[in-house]
Length: 443
Image (cartoon, rainbow, N blue to C red; front, side, top):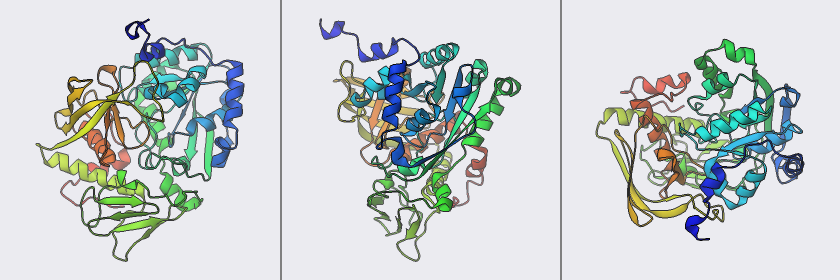
């Protein structure tokens, strides 16, 4: 059989039978999750107020997505109740996850792609079978330490399904495992599980009220939280490594892309402004006159304010970079934790008209234009080094090799809010869009 006659990985994933995991698989999964180097490694404290295992019908479990390890703790808390987890589409093409996702009946979702009906159909079938579906409405793990608004349409879907919705409330998981530096920093974590909505609640509330409630209960900042808790995290002198991906702008000299995170220190190479982290994420300035935010999350919020002001003042604003581009393989899974298969290179342009990829892909001319009515955020599968988009449902990756992934993510999000704004920022961030002629607030 030639390759042209073979079933592609995309086809195989799309046509998998939707069913609840088997008892044998669930037993093995539970043993795996409880091994010392998985869930127990993060010293979790479980607080279970309401448990889906006691729910007589199908139900949802949603959670505030702080790290890529979140699923481990759901497995421990919900056992022996089986569930189908929703995970990012690209993860199904990575060799170390593909087999596990297949046997565990994980449901694929193309993050921030509004027309992913396959995922909606799969979740609906599991609920109707009396199963449990777990997913994070934020669509991606935390980028900067705090949460982001849930994806549009979540509330309407939950209201339509009209089954109980439980919430797993995470604390400390980003401090243990984040998108900046992929190696874990094990430390104390906490998870509280409770019922958020009954079917009666869902029928009584409007979609906007449901969405507001979820955003409010998800409202959390891991860095600010640990200022009080003061838990230790084993960073092995890498607490600031690659932190410039998120904290790219210096509050003292105002220069962008001049910071560098090395081991436990972040420093501006232009003016020397910076700080060190200890194993509790406490910040200590390098000099008496250094200008710092109170935490990395507050620093990123200040950077976002500057982007908001810049694009509103400049109608001709344009970012242009030249990067490798890629996508998912057709027949063989990605090896060595790769996120995509490199297929060419292109100019990557962000302006008021949209996001544009113009170059060469698979030895052919490539031109992709994405409008903000269809795009509100790129997806970051692992770290800040790869931005993933789904124009017309096809995975397209841009490999950001110059440490601008955090900046570009916020830029695209705020371009959407300027021109479309159906994915709105939180009400408590309204100040970012006010008094645009005044200096940004560095909290």
